[in-house]
Structure formats: structure tokens, C-alpha cells
Amino acid sequence: MSLHTVLRSATKEVVIGHDQPFCVIGERINPTGRRIFQEQLRAGDFSAIERDVKAQVEGGANVLDINMGVPLTDEPELLAKAVQMVQELTDLPICIDSSVVEALEAGLSVYQGRALVNSITAEDDRMAAILPLVKKYDAAIIALPNDHDEIPMEADKRVELTGKIIRVATEEYGIAQADIVIDPLAMPIGADTGTSLVTFEVMRRIRDDFGVNMTCGASNVSFGMPGRHTLNATWLPMAMASGLTSAIMDARTPLIVESVRAADVFLGHDDWGMAWISAHRAKQAAAEAATA
Image 1 (cartoon, rainbow, N blue to C red):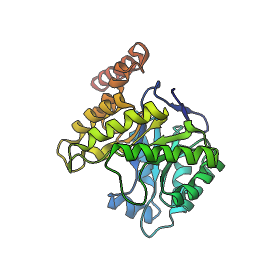
Image 2: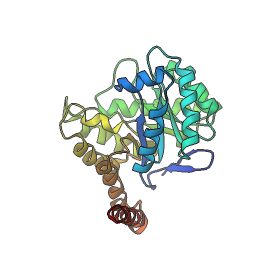
Image 3: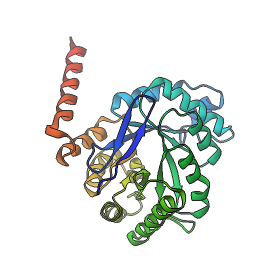
């Protein structure tokens, strides 16, 4: 069973699936940990967004995540503005990312297309607050299998909570199973190198038991470690082989994006390697043009 999660902008469609090329969701339009970007946004300066969109599109992103979680601002207004601006700059579909329900609604209300919403947990109040919006705006939803207790470290608990989320979303809110994208909770290996083995097991079981698509914050896995690009570029193909079908990741780093596209070739998601070959030719042509 291979479920397809279909995202759209006004003019472009992106399909996430276990039989599709990996979906790269650019993570950059996010002020978390970016002090200067936060100050610019507070001052109404959106110029960094333009640069970030350009870099991620050129890097090969398929979807762009937009988060406007800046303290001491009107987040709903900021997010709606950013969504409108990004839609004018690119035809890539958008992932609307906020923990504030009002901000999600503001972003969804101005989006022209079919968005991915980031995110809910298995907590009943979060599902009750956000799933009606997902249904109202015909969006897809990222869901994390953790509840009010904490992030479960055992695979069994994450799989159990995944089942709960899917049951509630489909039966109580009428959301298609194909539109539920599970985040299997990729933890930083800096604290415990065994966490990835649990996450890979969770991915395999979610793929085999439910057939839903999966995503995660891929940069998170290398947090606290040196050589992060190499770690991320190695981890992602391993995760893909375990069932990960998309990731919110750094689309500006060629090493990481190319490792994902190479894995697509080996997993049979790039027919005859044509996408890989044409990307290689484009790179060669650009290099030749630069030296001409």
C-alpha cells in the first residue's frame, strides 16, 4: 500500500509517496536561532526571505517550510504576510509551520493551493484545535507521535500513538489517511547514538503497518556533533531505506541534497537515473559557463 500525499501551489503539484522521489522540504524560512533575522522581521524587513527562497529553490527544494515564530510579534499577521510573499517568489508548495492555531489559520486563509500543516501531536486538545482547520482548508498534516507525557523513547509507544492519531484524524475528522504525514521523531545522536536505531525501526513499522508518508526535521539528528553535514548526508539515505519519504532539511547544502538524490536512484525512485544524469549535466554546463 503506497499512499500519496498531494501538495499544490497555484500552479505546481508535488506528490509525496513511498514510490516517489524523496520530497525535500526547505527548512530555512525559520527565525529560530537567527537573531538578526528576528530583528529584521520585527522591523518589517522581509528581504532575508527573498534570499532564503532563492537559495533553497536553486538547491533543489520541492516544498518550502515557513515559520514566523518571532517573540513579541503578531505571529498570525507575520505568517500570512510571509506566505503571500513566498507565493509571489516561487511556485513551490508551502508547509505552514506554527504552534499557534491562529497563525496556522491566517497562513491557510491566504494560501492558494493545498498546503502541508506543521504540526499536531497525539494530544487530544492539539488534535481538536488543528484538525478542523486541516479539514476546512483541505490541507495535509504532519503529526508527531508524542503525547503530554513526553517524547516516547520506545518504538512500540511511538507506533501505538501513530495508530491513535490516524484513527482520530480519519474517523472523527474525515481526513484521508494519505493526508497524514507522520514524524517518527528523529532525536539528536549527540546525546545517545542508539536513538537512530529506534527511529529507523519506527519508520519501518509505520510504513509496513499504516502505509502513510513520513517526514522529520533532518538537521536535528546531528545536533551537538561535529561534521554535521556528513552525518546528515549519511543518515537521510538510511532513513529513506527505512521508509522516510520527505524531510524538513537544509536545501542549500549540495552534499545533503545530492546524497538524497543518489539514494532515489538506488531505491528505484529515479527511472533510469534520468533526474540524476540531467542534474549532473546542468552542473557541468554551469561550471563550463563560469569558466568561459
